[in-house]
Every structure is written in structure tokens, then in C-alpha cells.
Amino acid sequence: MAVVTMRQLLDSGVHFGHQTRRWNPKMKRFIFTERSGIYIIDLQQSLGYIDAAYEFVKQTVARGGNILFVGTKKQAQEAIAEQATRVNQPYVNQRWLGGLLTNFQTVTGRLERMKELEQLDFEGTTSGFTKKELLLKKRELEKLQKSLGGIRHMTKTPSALWVVDTKKEHLAIDEAKKLGIPVIAILDTNCDPDEVTYPIPGNDDAIRSVALLTRVIADAAAEGLMERHQKPESGEAAAEPLAEWEVELLGAEQKTEEPAAEAVEVEVAEVEAPAAETPAAE
Image (cartoon, rainbow, N blue to C red):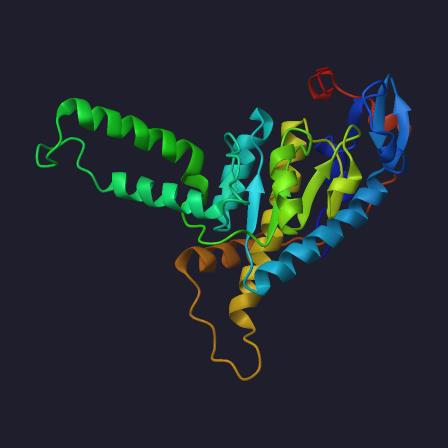
């Protein structure tokens, strides 16, 4: 079964790049054509890169690793949180905290502080704090939950990063490179492919494109989780039973599995960019 079909990519606008005046020459090999001042990405290549990224994520999670989903731009926030939560992976969809990877010990301390504050009774009178002190602590908790809520269960640096918009998330990319952590990312026509381990040429601005590709990565993580539990290594004890959410996830995937649709050729006639999907100039 195909990971994703050409039709799905076309319908989600994955092929729309940036305006021709805003591009990175290193992306030239991924560009199919130019139409009305917009670069059109070669989706035949994208399909191959999607398959490679899918397999990498699946194998990484199957071996016990985890994927940190990163996307703080408005178009990505909902999909990042929804899909990462669906497969029990950590995520960052607000501001990237400097040192989140390279100074993870300090971040762990902030996570412990957040969990400590969550134990307080902000409504009761038995906390031993004044109303003003409770108000300050509540504000501190809300701030920590907003910035760290998506990584609350992360106990070590991730095995890999899934990134939406490498230019916006350059801090996350830089930290991952310093630690040798692989990066899987959407590469729009203004990005640098040299910064990414597993690139997926595509539109990182349209909500539907971001949602589709993020779902594909989450599906790969879900499949990896199933393999982790169903195929214990030789000589090892069987893996612990699946959690309830994992059982539900597996059941849902089996019900919705459909035969792969035939790939459609990318024709210039099909790539007229709707106004709503045309990336806005920065």
C-alpha cells in the first residue's frame, strides 16, 4: 500500500512552492516547472522522499526511539499537536526554547517545576500560600505548560526531529546538527536541502499540505509502535501489552486501509494555484 498518493499530494497543494524571486538555488533539482510566478515542485520526487522518510521513522520508533514534532508557525501548530499526541510523541508548537536539545538537563528541571506546580491546589485554602503567591504561581504554571506541555513526558533527547519550515525552525535544526540528531523536514523552494537528513520537497505554508505530510509521519510512528510490541527480538521477553490508545489506533488503521490509488501525472494544467493556497510574500 502506498504511503500517500499523487492525487492526495495534488489535492493538498503540496506542489506549490514560493514565488520565483524567493528561492534557494540548491532546490533547483526538486522543481518541476514555473507557473504564474510560482515554482511547482516535482511530486514524483516527493513521493520517493516520502517513502524514505516514512521507513526511517517507522524503523526508528520500532527500535524504541521517539520523534520530536516541531512546527511553531500558525499553519502548523494544530497539526503538530494533534498528530504527535495521536501517536504519543513529544512536540513543540509554540516558541522553541533555546537549549531544549543541547541543554536538556536544564529543560528537565523546568519540566519538574511544572509538574510540581500542577500539584498545587489553586482553588482551595490549604496550600499555605497567599492569594498573590498563588496567582503568581498559576501564571508561572500556565507559561510552562504553554512552552513545555508538548514535551512533558520526554525523558531524553529525541531520536529524530520532524520539522515544518526549516527556515523558521533554524534554532531547532542547529541544535539537532550539533548533537547529530537526524532531521526529517518539508523542503519548500526557499529552503536549504543540506540542512536536512531526510527531506520531503513540498509546500510548508499551506495548512492542508502541512497537515497531510505531518499525518504521514505520524502514521509511520504508529506503525513503528505496533512493530515494537508485536515483534520482540530473539531471546528477549515479549513486549508489554499495548496501551489502550495503541489498540484503538491499530484498529482504526485497519478499518480505514484502502487500496492505493494509481499515481497521476503532474500536468501543468493541474497546477494553477488557487488564490487561497498561493504562499504570501514575506
